[in-house]
Length: 298
Image (cartoon, rainbow, N blue to C red; front, side):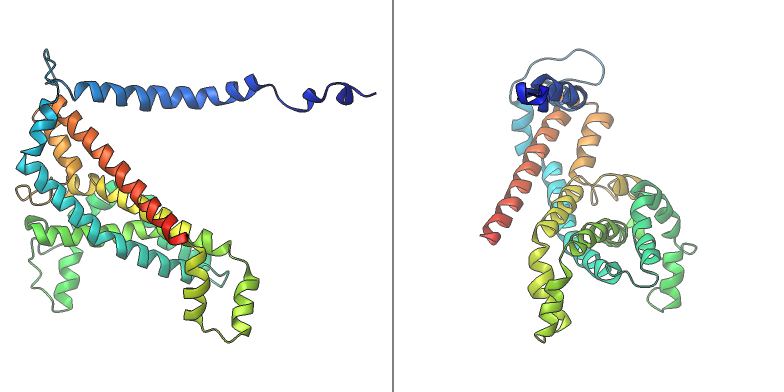
């Protein structure tokens, strides 16, 4: 009788091996996620300043949120911004995925070109947009003046609605590449035989997309929407670089308001309470999206 037959347990790893393999990840999550989160929850029950002593004030910071008009204005603006960019990002990403999903000539080049804005990063793109949106010299005004739409002197970043529109266009252009990659991966996983059968039955391109591609991409589309919505609710970089929340507080998002309370007004306790509320809201929104997905699948 062989050793394996006498000791079948030798075919499997002992439980402690799996634990040892996961310890680095558990340590990383504990140190950089769980501990800061617990500490932030504790800070939210205090009037913790950036410098100096603090006192425990219970639910005082959370009660103040309910009567904070600036916070609710930032919430409304963040929701509006999220509503504006979410659908265009998904639609443009889907169109780009359709263009590059087949292994046609130049498909690889197009994939690279469409994905480059996301790789460059929002910080770099935002600084470039600051230059390109300058009145009289920026490329945005030069192009629009050439088309006869403006006189070339529009101060895009000095007006709330104009700045919002400019940022939304930039974000749709920058983030659609990620959605394209996600959807393209899902499209390439659909068996070619399904399309060939539908084509033999006389289905048009749009009928194949509507009846085959979109239903089989439901999970990928849901994941893309979740990523897009969470990213929009946590928007900070583009607004900080381009407008600093101005003029006034017209383009101030929730995360920018948390930053202002914590690192400008030096009220870390209040900022922590706002952060905890934001985390809970994002968790609820994400759970609702997944629940709607399961209901549609059912």
